[in-house]
Image (cartoon, one colour):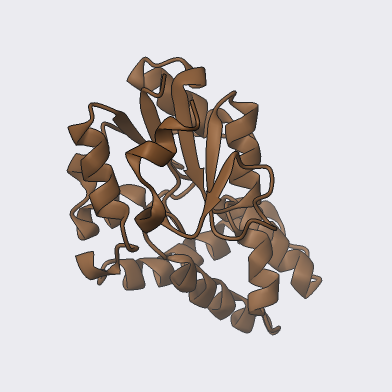
Length: 215
């Protein structure tokens, strides 16, 4: 029986990937190299510091930890300038309606995101009240595909992982959901998200009937 749905943020509820990419591209430019959209694919579902490590690898640059922390902070400042201007019309199609439907059906909801800015984004989008539990990068130490973020979400909801379904747009996120012992709905490409139990193009394609078939 499905008792809870856990959602990644970027690419599932809202598309902030474009803002992350622009911010990382600015950091790469400061370091003297180009960071392409193809390079950026490797950052999906990855924590900020792990993303910086990938970016530095692309640029062939090695830095001491304290300099890496300065760069990660600067990237976040670039990113914040974008998300502080976000509006509710940037919610991805169907996301708000599906969250409201889950609440009406008595199904618990949780956010499970690596983003340390998740609360800021949800507040800007006026979605905070639609999540019973919010687990973000400020409460986790391990990045996906480690299942920590989803297991913490299930624990906070006091619901057994086997009764949870995760919605993810990244391969690492799908692997995290499976490692947590949860069912997973992929949002995006069936080729990339082939390990998910079901793949749809967006939450506008999700219904309670489709959800019930995953039990």
